[in-house]
Length: 606
Ligand code: M6R
Image (cartoon, rainbow, N blue to C red; front, side, top):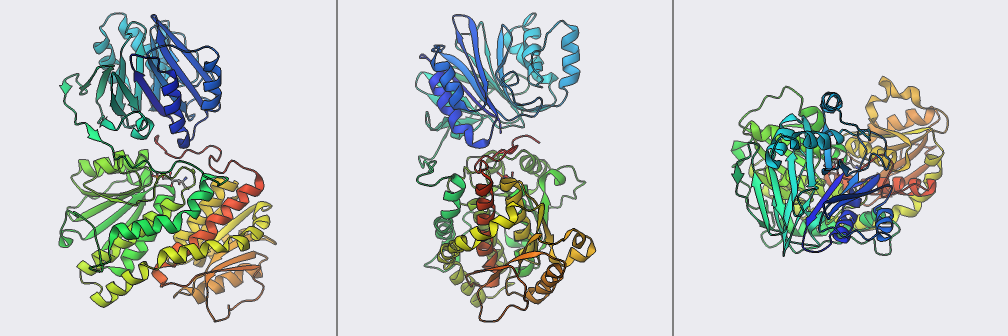
């Protein structure tokens, strides 16, 4: 989604801004722009499409300003176009914005009555005109405060001014914003990753705060304009791998990396000497928690559903899983013995962050399971469980899903043991099995060739279904989500036992249906449901685990068998052919696999 960069320096800033914008490309965007200030004039360049196009355009004219802002836009208000791309500027001020201004139409009306002329369809432009209006009668700080008070909604802003040759204002409400410190220059970024190539010294703005950046100073203010102090944090030097290497797509690389990322995570959490799961610095006693609420969006929500299953199987705790955008507006009953777990790869998802904020405001115990440990969600939770996957660039979440499930499994197992709901022997056996997981994930990647040959039926289909029961139901949802988002094929994940209650009517001759039926306690039931769809013409791709027993049905179109492991851990293996199915279907259709249409990697607006 949208990304912000700002730099004030003693040397020209445009090429550094472009380089930082390239770092933000992974978030998903449709247009890009930059504005710098030179000799009292704001110069703005924007284009629809890629940062590379912007770079080529500005290389022809040499942008020399020493203060500037840049942006990658993911359209919310107004179509993707050069006109709607950020920055938006008047003669006196230029603004980049992440988020949504909810009262933009009311503000626009007020500004139009005052004679302001709008050029774009965006909500952002009201900010430009508000500041311009207030600057007529007020000093800069008062104008900013007045403007911020008028805005409803969520935002992160970067602003430069015609009459201020060494100044950038940054402001935050809802959307994240970071400040970086360099030698004779300072930076603004929508996340620290955008700034990482320039500095490892970072501060984060909290909600309601704004900052004034000059090349040799940074000042922070609260929402009333009172100066505040900020901690400077040092980012870890661990760079992570942002390179595709020889892979055609990041997604392909990230799928193949899973044996390694799983191994890293196992090594981080399992103490092999003491044969124990380490949840270092876990701040609560187990008897302080009686109920666990898991919250996330998209794939992260699916790992919450998976964890719900494990917590239910292993403990007597009261468990629920919720979609963040629903949870945040629900009438929640906050209780002292609840633990809220927020799952997010990016740690910046707006709805998940808002749900966390709500829990923090109600003084709840909060824990986050994240990939990006410097993220807003990690910073604002009481306790963080990292998934240690390294950067995930492809919009479709793959290795992070396995990482989230793994950490949540560790958590459920450890709690079950501490609460004496499983005995030591069982606990040690499960830890022993976990150590085998990386190798089995690796072996399961070999199902690729089989899956490739199934793709044609999906590519040509009007729609498809993914069925599973118990632990296989969240995996069915995840498989369907992957196919939708990458191959743009309608796909529904459904509990297999629900088919007779409506969706069976959708089955027609030749419709591809994925049936997930590992040989667990649901096996026979799921196989019966499979027979029902086959009888109505479905082309079934059955995913199960290896066994000497025969499968109890003829007329299965294709069967893919994953390796064998304890039932608890089968979802890790079964996910892999489904990731491959979506990947190869999208490849066959020639779609942009790492950047599917309409989607963004980090969903920083509601
Ligand atoms: O960064 P998060 O894990 O919070 O993101 C949540 C969802 O937006 C994300 O999982 C999304 O559903 C993926 N594109 C699915 O592949």
